[in-house]
Image 1: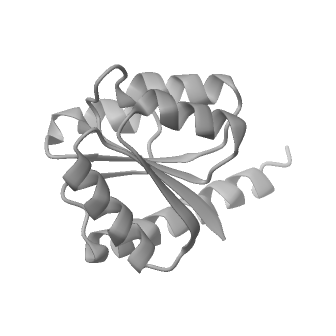
Image 2: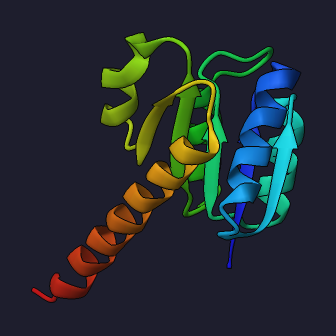
Length: 132
């Protein structure tokens, strides 16, 4: 099973997202962090599968966090959760798997996970079929 991390500096929205993801029963573990630096330390040490994150957080925005994780070679599906849809274009250009408006509900989490399954399958097929 997969491991997910949620990073949101709003404690209420963080807890809502963590509970919604846990309710899907699709993850071995779901970790929640209000501090992106602390989350980064865990993700650097331990591989994870999916990162759900707010765009603007105290100390570090999601794009910087994504870049840092990619530099250390982490293969993660990124999902942005925000109440502002103004970052969507930049987010998809940076290779996110999904962009959801907050709050993340159980129904929204289930829809996102279905998209992630399709995204992962498509990416896997792309690699498998690229034999030159």
